[in-house]
Image: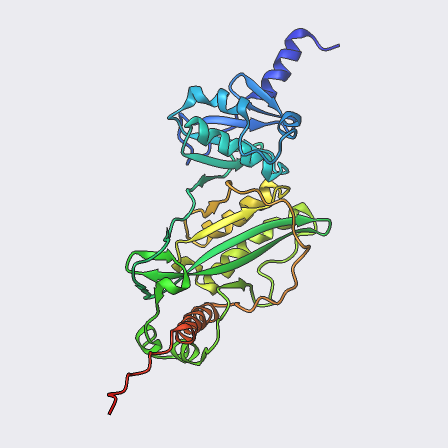
Amino acid sequence: MLTLLTLLSVSGCGRSEPPRPADVPADAVRVWSDGQQLTVGAVSVPITELAQAPTEPTSPRLVQALQASAGKPLWVDLPADTPFWVVRQALNSGDEAGARPAWLSVRGDGAPEAFAVTPPPKFTIGGACDAPVPVTGVEPLVTVSVQTGPDGAWVLATARLIPETAQGPTELEADCLAVPTCDALFPEGAAREACAAQQAPAPQRVTLGGELGCLLPLAKQPGDVAAWRSGLAQRVEELGLGDTPLRVVMPEAMSRLDAVLAVVGGFVDAGLPPPSIGTQLLVEGNDGPPVCNAPVRDRASLELAGARWLGGMRAWAAASAPAPAPEEGDGG
């Protein structure tokens, strides 16, 4: 029979804090989990309680527990198999309580690797316009989706082409954009030719892939996601994604934390800051594993997609322009 001293010792070992990652500030408040509950300080919230409202962005009890740490950084340290909806509630609860900035890690035996949780990428969203705004190019908004299903886990990536203006990337209605000639946008090369040849609207969102069409291989077992890091770092280089600051990772509700951080780690391994992790919206389902037919597989293809979209915008504007009024005769 275990003595009381042994029981206290076991309990203490279970709750001892692991070595703190070097990037995490010493005063960061830690939210951790044993797989059954989220704990901050002396407060524990059962995950079954969170599951009563899994789509809610925050947990009221977590927010209340974290309010004493307002103004301090947050360290969310959870098991590898934690579903993203739980991670989302922990991060958003800290943000609502004023505990920021935040770091996210997979809880392990040694010092975990922690990733900074960065704010969402920003660009200007305009309304009505007094006059068309000159366009100088395009900036891809890259969204990397982490999805899961009965067949395993997989990653999709798209680039939504945002018009570049004097104010930076700016989302406007089509009739508020003035697209210069293709010669002015692309002084030479295949991009200018693609722009000039596009005589109909072109897709504003394109799918990104790799050599075989899919961005990354299907992870049939949890351990397979480790290969995503090196694979994604290579895709980032091939697609030229380091040239755009607009990058966000959007995990589905049931995506495992280790899968999400494998994707974040791929960008870091490519020499880039951690991409933003989407926590405002919660995606709950998908259409199943992807068909590996992504049309954009390298930097040149992505540039051509932008050129075609701008060319299509010029063609649309020309077709939509009102016909000039007939000149009045002199009555002679």
